[in-house]
Image (tube, rainbow, N blue to C red; front, side, top):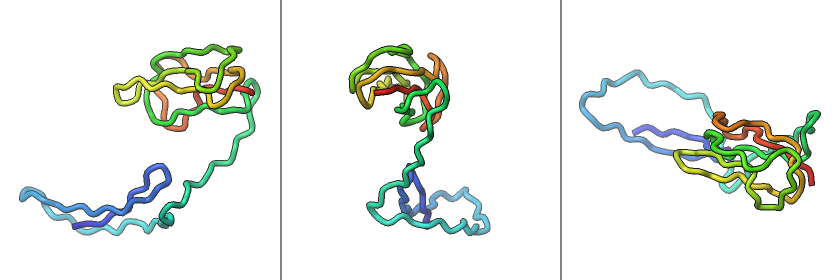
Length: 128
């Protein structure tokens, strides 16, 4: 058995993996670099808020997961209410709406339909 620490979205998980199967040739053990463990229940470190660049609003709307932009619902200058769909991402074959976190005006749409995005990518910005 091998023990690993895996970090997903800032949360550390200790896992044990058991190797089975006769056709696997043993390899020399490798020592992984030590990773500091986050205390149980500790929040993930927050990123420093970025100052809006020219043409961007103060509220950043980012991708929660990697996927592809399926449809852009709102346009620049649109008035939206909290919870209104800004765009739809296709994540793991599922259409996932990305909604306005607050009521306000869409200042920029930073992606286009069909574009692949990574988790945390800037999708749009808005102002209250």
